[in-house]
Image (tube, rainbow, N blue to C red; front, side, top):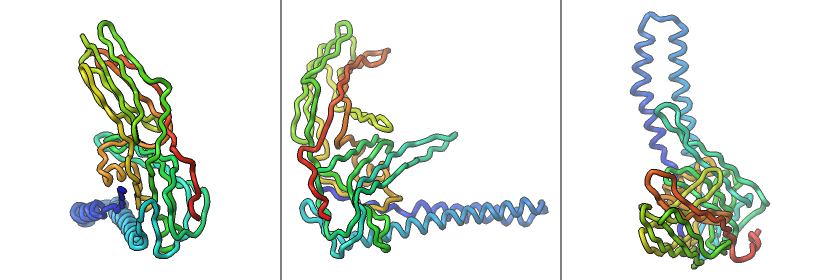
Length: 311
């Protein structure tokens, strides 16, 4: 079992505060010492106060969230496919959704996250059993992507807002065809698809003349396309794509969980795993023109039926 505890560091906020002290205070002193209109002095004071107010507020929220996560850590123990609480907790049961993207403005880039926890039920829990619930982890190398995970949101006052999310491997792959092929001039490639435990195998046979390589890619098309190269070859190749093969547990505060934080904490590099509809692409990489490709859409569902939440 892979466990991820998201504890956002306050170092970045402390750096911003220190930067404000080093740069902002001397500037304010110079402005106040000069013979400038009162409006300019008032504006400078307001700007410095706003800067420190925002950084201190961010520091307080992050520190408070971190304390709640650490407190929950002390209350839980993981045994097999179940989390036990030393003290029963009141919680909402449901799904956590998050998608993240980067935006650029001039030379700066900022990361934006939309997150939401959708409640399905509410109750008091003494344990949480991992069920074969649908989930999705589709995160690109830069942290853009989407997350859909089942779990609970704690309602106790001292732990309010902390989430326990999980993903349990259980997959049934449904491919519309057993093979697909692509040709362009004298170049030809064929791929055969075979389901394996927790994933699938693609056997490729290529006869290339002008194309540089034949490649197999997996694509998740949600809010943002996430693409993963499964393998490439100039002649023959056998490539396997394995989805998440062990249970994953994520503990963190609702306001701190994002695709980027999960990617970094889990050291995934990039990840496409879970349930839903995906694209399998076979392509010829031909110089000086777009890839010549053939795509199929396939579906992945949990193998077993959903059982109770253990409320």
